Length: 407
Image (cartoon, rainbow, N blue to C red; front, side):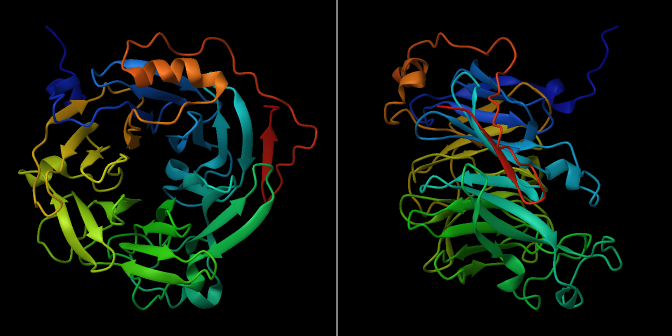
């Protein structure tokens, strides 16, 4: 008797499910299994792995390809894992950049870092962090399951900008700008955290966009003043993830959908929002609402086109690529639907860079140019141990630290 596979996704089907090359957005998909060993995968349109990076940390939680072809990665430092239930799942602690061969070029650490980090256009690193909010604010925070605060209180999110040598140059605290009267924790969530930030991204004008899951809020922060200049809450949002700026100035948002206030059923969708009107100008949801429901993780992925969207529902490891023929369409056909093999569990975010990147730097120009050309790639995973450079000035104290190798 053949044993029954206890993993439902493998029972149904894995690998490439469908691909319409005339309508699917062409490119390579980058993803990092959330519970993996630190391996980052680059997948082609045929569902084949064309390159892997081996990182010195487990994911904490994503990797991004930079414009020069290097990989920017958040790693999980396996220390201080017991702050509250759930912290160990989304904790990070390290941000680093590696070349095509997985050689670490620089690394910074911060004990409060979680979920997301970005390499800014000025060359610095922006980390999403958390720590307990002031005691005076704690009593004013509304919502959540009563009497579920941590021994340290209620945690709130803040941002840290540092150089690649670990020097902190800017900090922004969410609790100094959000309003506890309007940013209310959803009723079924614990009061471990007020906001539960899951995304920070730099906009073309240098301002920042953030997503706060526990209070179903996305906001834009003015960098010079630190003030929140734009905000969208619930409804229409329900615990969203991954707001991404589009070329037309709109935001593409994965609206996860638990605890909806404007619909009786929980369901996930992807929406395009015009910040000027605050209106939804495009929306994708599955015909069967519950087949596309991912209550806790994932994002719309990344494209460089306002006419297509890569959606990666991490709970089911299904990648959808949508071609949006008109920005006001409420529903889109699915020209490409692929399921990755289950390598290390769920995937929190997938990135699809297009093939029109600028030429890469010398050390990666060969393999990356081969991929960009559309020819079969003669690249693969890196064999042997990682060679980490040493720095006699390394300081990994309470505030932060770095490692750096000579370029």
